[in-house]
Image (cartoon, rainbow over all chains, first blue to last red; front, side, top):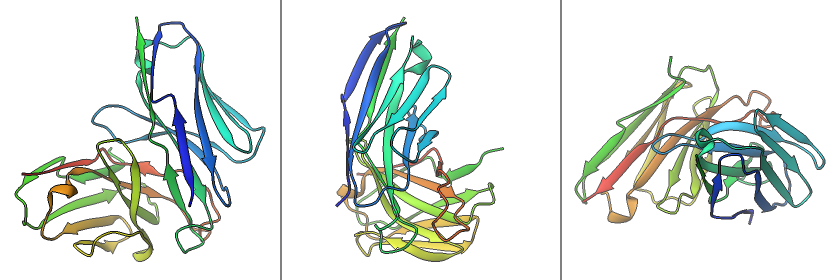
Length: 115
Length: 117
């Protein structure tokens, strides 16, 4: 069964203090690793898709990287508005009994950035 | 303006009742999903429809029945509600015209918070 584990569960940073979130995965076939941001009372908001080991994507203060076993979300000089829960998910085309596959999510990392 | 919209946003009801949650997307996507997010924040897939056809049906009690009247709508009906059904239910959509070989991200609604008394 596909597994996605995110660490740490919660991370508190001072504004400007850079850090990284980890997403470790075990999946029989990977067709994409997705990062989402979720604010309280809202649905997950898409950030990045990574397809293959070595790939990197950037958006403002966020950079996502991918290896064969894990992905990192690096946050550079975070601001209070970056506070949210960050979710990682993998898509396995062999799961779900169809060629569509399904997304398996991790439990998320709750990021709090203090001013 | 809203891409994926769910109604109601909050649903408080008694054990044993039957309730429905509606979802509509105006993104022109052909695939829609229902997820359940428990108190530990795990998002777990329940169902998926592609062009009104059920393609993913996870191990979910028979009390849960999805219905897709057209590509833009996916509703969730729940019979005989139980305490353990309390959770936030999210609808999502994506474009999968290439039979799952595309890798378009899923777009989520803001959820329906279901509380069973």
